[in-house]
Image 1: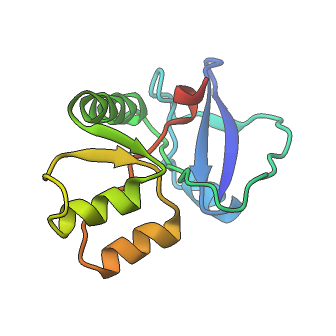
Image 2 (image 1 turned 180 degrees about the vertical axis):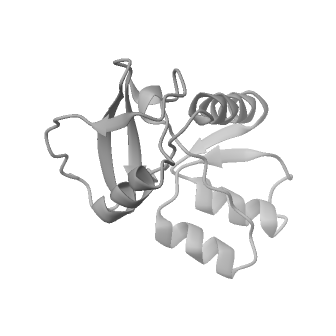
Length: 142
């Protein structure tokens, strides 16, 4: 995955993720890119410094969004996260253990959220325990 800093002809700056540079080139040539602020299809790359991942087991997943629906999708994701935080218990790093206790009837059933590694989530899935990753948007971390 690669993140590009983009800018429309009207000067609006935004970012978007692409599978690779060829994916960006293909979308740009096909006219599939547009500014999320004004909808302009005249979009180009900005000069940017490379980003290097510092943690191999990051739980953050990239979200590729380009086009006018970007702000709407981000608002829906924020509303979902807010609803979850309001109506579920944050069990933090104990998520996998707590999910198992609920699944096997060791504690009362309730909505929970927390942190799990990819391996923990995969193990829960293999045990038949449904889990759903909740995305964190880059601007939510500021």
